[in-house]
Length: 312
Length: 312
Image (cartoon, rainbow over all chains, first blue to last red; front, side):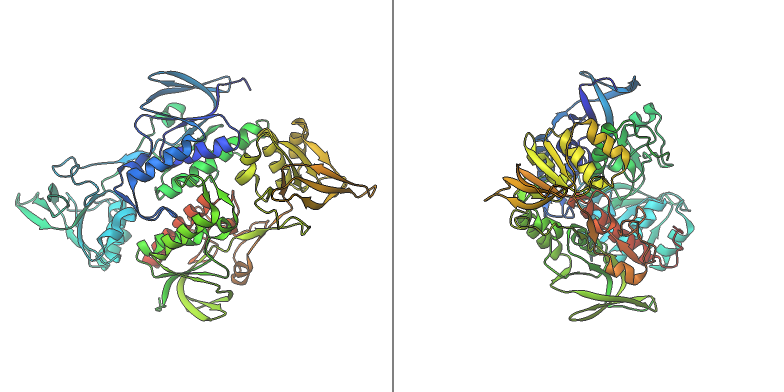
């Protein structure tokens, strides 16, 4: 294999990318982490992190800072670097960024993605203050309170049922008369006596410092009303940042996330993926673990390039 | 489904069990964690943890304490409780312990295991002071130094090659003239010019406060010599604590670890496994992630027991 400046270029400095950097460097790989924004990924956007084992209850921004500091002891982390292209020539990946290109023997894609937003007044201002995009992450905070869930797909119904089971008063708001979610999920939600507001949209999220309610509009009658609630879970889809994966022609899952095996290998040799970009439960702890596994797989493959990898 | 005192009994309070407790409770499950020893699992035995993203460099005992405190906010953790039997009757698991029995709808097995020890003088005393059982965990500390690796199987050869690639002077010590490791691993190690001491055993690990050398005996000549080194990696096998898995008749991997799917489901409905007992890279971060995933799978299955689970 020809020489390259890096053994592993990691794209994305969320938990997956940062943990991957630690494990890569500790395995002797020359690694670098690139992020188009700042390090920390979704953790940066999380007001309080309560479910990352071992850190207790901590502000997301503080944990992101710790994660970055930790990984920085092992590898260079370049923030504000946008990767515009990746190509493969003679077994070397060339990673094109706004500020020049890098060569590497292997690539770890940990680019995450973003939850779709409604784009309505109050949504951004109250994000993390009652507005949430993840029931698994934040549902616990609303025990005994009331929330709306916006969406009509399977994820929305799953999240709504999760919240009802936690003892939360849930109203599911969906713009159409019918939901897209699979039938069994709808039945499950109805059997829990979860409330429904069909033919309705949330036009505004209300509240000073925290969510206090939403303004609902019925699309059939045109009538608007204010529904008091303590939280609004927006569940209208997730957009994986899979541009690089597409450029490389990696095999994707139906939802646009990258398909990997359990060792985080993708359909292309020497390309690994970890974290939210691969789907699953999309938690910081699972991203960190997958990044570690990906780095160890990269080490293993680079150490023994003559080994044939199992056909997936 | 009949009622049970708990939704989920978690056996083992290492990272997998503790993280599972957090996610289970946050999903509204009534969970309890049982451990025959103290909470923390292998983390408790690790002098310094450097690779658990977000906590920097911390004593294993301190991190274990944090993990326990964190999980204790969500579920009861009972230490010093030995589980002697598990049975299933009318869809309820009955977990027998030294101090009574517990009933639960689901079971998370996170019992880990232990690395086989040589049982020679100096080994226990210098554990964590140069004596290690995991190259991925501790190899980095020995960069530029010299170590022996004891063992002749595939894991020993893999670890020895890993250490050589880190720039460590490695001598592999094996009691027989031939190694059991697969041929390609032996070739790889030889191609790296790794040293071999065949027909040899380590009789004692030497050193005051840290490993300073080992006493080697050649079995063919009977001659003993002292080999100076800074570390001794013991790689003679891992014994998964799979007694409960066997009682339940769970499907195991060839190495005795529990077979799971990616959602940490075992071959038996409502039984999950996570952490070192499932094999893989056996790191604290991967155990914590798997515990979280297992708990979310338990939530999902208990919420929808009428769903048919995919046949594995």
